[in-house]
Length: 150
Image 1 (cartoon, helix red, strand yellow):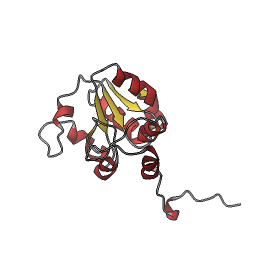
Image 2 (spheres, rainbow, N blue to C red; image 1 turned 30 degrees about the vertical axis):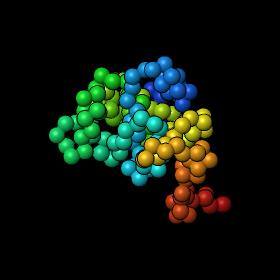
Image 3 (cartoon, rainbow, N blue to C red; image 1 turned 180 degrees about the horizontal axis):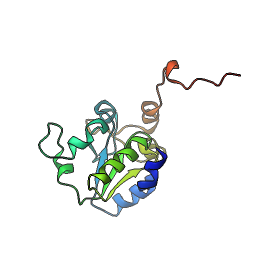
Image 4 (cartoon, one colour; image 1 turned 120 degrees about the vertical axis):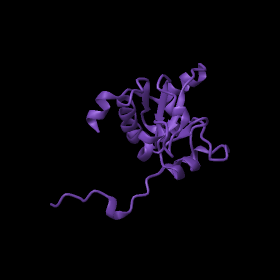
């Protein structure tokens, strides 16, 4: 992940807010899974899960997202829950010729912490406290890193 971050530009939630407030034309791409996206997302964003990103960016696939396939010259801000998947996606997209793709550092969690609006799949606003609960990690005990033996 470290090397990816040396190749990818990241912006902060307040940078994205400033771009939106300035009326900057950009594409908000959320690379979380469809169920995550349906729970809450940044208004106006589109969903192309990280697992099918390459096909979403190309024509003639079942997963093709026309706005992405035609968007090589767009400013694209890539979003995920915490900023890790989005950084990997930005790196991939840059390799695919999307020179203006950037990652939202801190992801949707940081956007929510900055008290910016989130909506659900129906476009209904999601309360910040409810969003916090939805964005909280749900690790099972076996998914946690083992403690070092003494």
